[in-house]
Image (cartoon, rainbow, N blue to C red):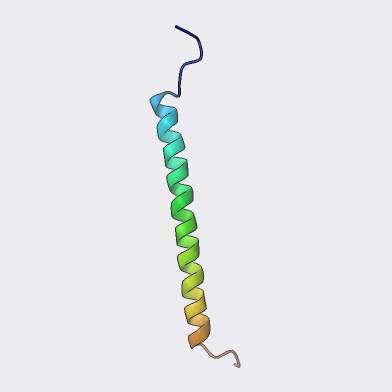
Length: 47
């Protein structure tokens, strides 16, 4: 057997978690922007 083993399960899980979090964060961010746009169109600018 060679010394370079494929990713261990722990490493696989870590990578998957990181990708999942990144994806979730990007989706959250885009939803937040949508919400902000909606609010901006409802709230009058002149105060």
